[in-house]
Image (tube, rainbow, N blue to C red; front, side, top):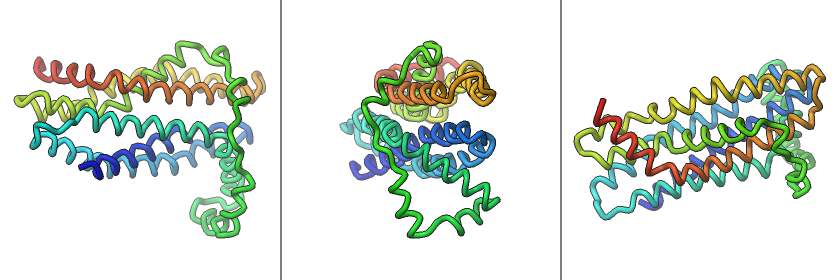
Length: 265
């Protein structure tokens, strides 16, 4: 069973790594003045995340099934390992961000020349060019942290992004955990992740994304410096990292909340 937990953790690591690294494409797109191209290419990164999520879901379900068959199985600790993998994935993306921005700029430039993703892959992906990628790597430095200021982004956006990340991180896990807490509404609870994720979607769509969009447009129009946007993305990634830590705290209360909701519906 531990092997299955580690496999789910690996997919969780990939999901949070790739989703966090989409900030690098957006940053590169703004730097080059080609945000629309960058947003279209970010779909490729998200495709990796969605594929990993598609494989992860049934594997997580099998862990829950095993926990129901073995009453002495410590399910909560295993779920905390999975959430820990989300933290590690986000932290790794934070470390890779400087290199990812530079590499994303190269990808955008190659895409413009090629005109399509298949042609870009044929013309740009080779052993030699993959080896040359190491020359574009930038190691993170502590001085980068000193340039991050909470003032570059409203505090409420940082807090909300942290909360949204925490909710998304535990949405499915809390629903599956809730299904083990009630025998009468087990199936209903397992299908209730939307009760958690719906809150995060509302917060993200109404309060967070419009603010980030406005700040991005100001940078594109030259009203604010690019360094400000770079700091904003940095703060968003740090708030995502803190959100995965907050998820550890919210896991059990969210599971009991789902259990209560399905019992009164």
